[in-house]
Length: 465
Image (cartoon, rainbow, N blue to C red; front, side, top):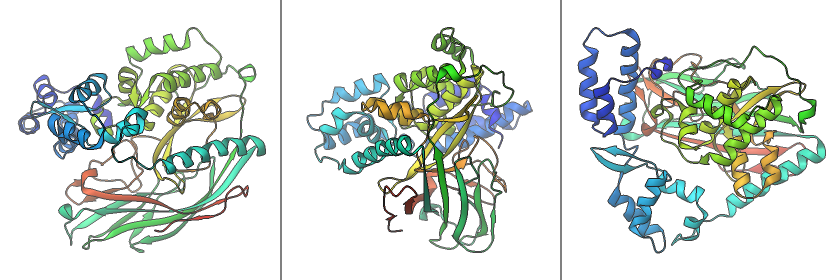
C-alpha cells in the first residue's frame, strides 16, 4: 500500500471522530464515504485510515485515567494522583481520547522507567539495572577499542521468529510471512542464511534489497513458529572528522522529500534556519542538527508509526521520539540543509539486550558516508557520557544488524495488504490471503545466538534459543 497518500488530509467530520476516539462511528463514516465517487487520492487515504483505526481499536491505548493511576500506585512509592496529570500535561505520558475519555498508551509506564531516573528510584519492587549498566559499559568500551585500534570487527549469529497469536490463528489458511535478515551494507559482509522453519517454500530477497527479508508462503499449521537463523560480519573503521577538512560540495543524491514522513514543511524550514544560524560548512551543519536532536528531543516510546502522519514534523513539534523518529528528523533536516542523508535500521544486538533499532547515515566529502545515531547519542549525553555522545556523530558500534536501507518500501516479494509497520521492518510481517495481521496479533522475538569479537576483547557469548 502506497503510504504517500497518508499525506492527504482526512475529511473534517472523520478527523473529529478520530480525535475524540469514536472509532466505531469513524469506521461507519469511512464505509459511507467509500461508496461515493471520490478522488483517487482521497479514496486511498481512507483505505489507509481503516487500518489505522484497526490499530487504535485493539488496545493501543488501554489504560483509563483510573487504571493508569492504579498501576502507578502499585509500582511507585508515595505516588500522588496529580502526578499523572502533570505527566499527561508535559507529554511524558502518551495518551489519546478513546470513547471521548483520555486513555494512556500501553507502554506509558515502561517509558517512564526508561526515561525518568526519579521514577526508577521510587519503584516498590526495584528493577534490576545490572544488564542496562553492563550494556552502557560495553558501549563505552567499544568507543575505547575503536579509537585505540582504528576499527573493530565482529562475527554475529542471530535467530528471529514470528508466530500468530492463538486468538488470530486460522490453521489451514494460506499465509505469507516475511522475516527481516541482514542486507549488504558498507559495514556488513559474509552474510549467511543458516536455517529456517519451514525449510521449504521460501524465497530470499537479493542482498541489496532495501528492506531485505526471507519470505515463507505456506499453509498455517497450529502453533507454528516461523524462524530464521543467520550469521554475518560487521567491520567498522573509526573516524574523527574535522570541520576544516570538509569540502562544500553540491550533491544530487539522497536530498529528496519522501512523503509522508520526509517532507520539507514550513515549520521545519523555520526550525532549520534557527539551528544552522547561517552555518555553511556541511559537517558543522550535520553536527548542529545532531546537537539539536540530542539536546532537545526527549527519548520516548512511540505508538505504532502508522498512527503518525509525518514523523519528522511530529518529532520537531513535540520534541520527543524514539530511535526511528529521531533518525527520520535527522535525515529530513540534513537533506533540507543540502547534506545527503539516508536510513539504516534493524537490530541493536548484544548478550545484554537485543531489540529493534534505527539510525542514519549522512554524506560529507572527503569522508563519504558517515553514521549518526541520535538516540544512542542522546542517551549518552543524558547519562554524562560525553565521549560516547560525540562518538555517535560519525561512528557506529559493531552491535548491529542492518536489514533496511530505506523507509516505506515494498518487500521482495511484496505484501498484498497493509503492514503491521508500514515504515520499517525489524520484527516480521504476516498476512492471510484476504487480510493482514497487525502487531497486536503477532508474537515476535530476536535472539543473539553467538557473538565473536575479532579484536579478542570479548569471548564468544552463547545464549539459549
